[in-house]
Length: 473
Image: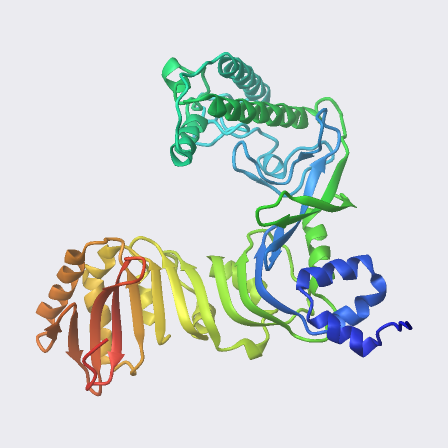
């Protein structure tokens, strides 16, 4: 049978129906189809942009810096969040000194009298003014960790069968004991390990911590010993419920963010069509740019960080055809929201607000969106005078029919919701009450305030402007 290669147009047609991750893989392995791949429309279900990782649907891609000179079986990752102290590293210098240590003038963290964790994650309040003293303290902590390992290896528990949930909780308690500052385990603390399986997990956990501690000390001492180890960037592929897999190594030039930008250029730049994205989530804190020519048509947008920072990244890449957004999710703190952010927020048909305990009342009062869901907001706001002011504002300004704010209650008792509605009814003399709702007449409509439970039994209060003839939810 005769076989002919696909024409250019046929190849584009086939490519546009492939999964985006398959397209990226084919384009990287077969440069001859790269032009056709970038000419075919690209559709992505979910795109999550983080500081050092991009998730396309269920697959993540991250550039990671590894130390190649470690005396261990595998390379040691130096970028990202430390599993010891939770501090983020983007880059290291030629000796391996972490960037947050360089920014601190080369001083090891901790031991300055403040509640700041050390390189190993402990909150040691002992004041040690010199790096030499702090390094010696870290070596003492490392020695204690080795003694703790011996304690666990010699421990024999009374065999006790536990269900998986209890075992998880017990092991979590074991991981956080005796760390401020580190000390040997007491008998009572060891008894948290109820069976041999938990002991094995504890041994592995402590061994891993010791390896990390040794690697951290070695990295910090490289400069004093004039050692310049080899570092390399690995492009790593992540998939849900699967182990990370290295795709390819990349030369490390001291700028991890540049490598991240090159990855983004490969995935998204030079495309002939606007990329269609159903859900775009932004959780980026590092200054990594997106391709200058990138345009996305986004349906749903989720800011998982402060808006002012995220908007700098997002505004240039969102195509005007995206507006109005179907949904917009934002996280609002007590800081005033900038005017430009208000304008962007108004573009959504449905706004989801994650807020602080008491919320930002000025922000809530200024919202012009017709539909807003407040996901995290203390019940205290609804019991305060600010809620009454919000209701009065709606009545006095004759909010249009269809305006609807829904508040998630942190309290789960109906009695709390009844108290809130009763307070509103007492203040608004024209209000009428029904089963789990009250109605307040407006100039050309009715403001209806109800409480209800969803399928998961979570309690909500909703205020909605409805036609005056409507008496049910």
